[in-house]
Length: 305
Image (cartoon, rainbow, N blue to C red; front, side):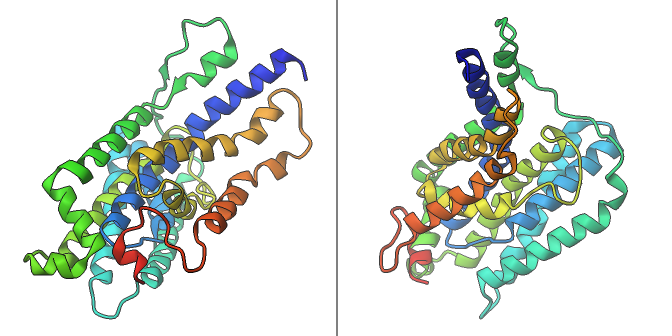
């Protein structure tokens, strides 16, 4: 491989990391907020698929990509709200409810989205940050999804809010000690419902990235398990919203290796390289979740289960 081809591959991986990593970023931020409050939402795969369909449908019917983004956020928040309310009932398992709602979200998306498979919807326009360069690969890599800067800003805002604000203290207290939260007169269930709903709204932005930017269309296999991978990504990020940005870029770059090699004519092992994000997920889970050892940064209520 020549140096020019190697540079092209590296730039393609960079651009792919920004494109493919955007849904990972928003879903992981949503799960991070949810788990900080002491609740696990395995239904985020359903949230992601439903919000992707709603975003595409909203943009198609309204003619505005940004209305589609809002539709995705609302649909994600509503499905997550249902998860939060069900998990507030006595003797209801977070994990079982999340799996059920994942199937519900995917089923609703497939049913309502059948008529949206063929049409084209307005897309989010990329920010062309590489126009100063004469290198086409660099210009392509620096064509940024406009939601990505929003995601980075939300990560830092969420980090600050969880550490410095009153609501952030309450969310972390609900996740670390339900008894202490009740002793101070706050509703643990109410705090977790609010955090879960807000997490679903963030995940809805990830769905909007899928259908309104990259790959930019609606089909029933669009998610490829990214909502479930986000749970492992949060563990890898040690429940730190800032690290979710780095983790999303790593996973996005891993998913872009195959297409990057194909762009310079290397076609062997293309499907094998497409499995890299899933292999990386398994490695992270094996490395992070060791028997008898708590992952650093894990909320207390999750560690005690």
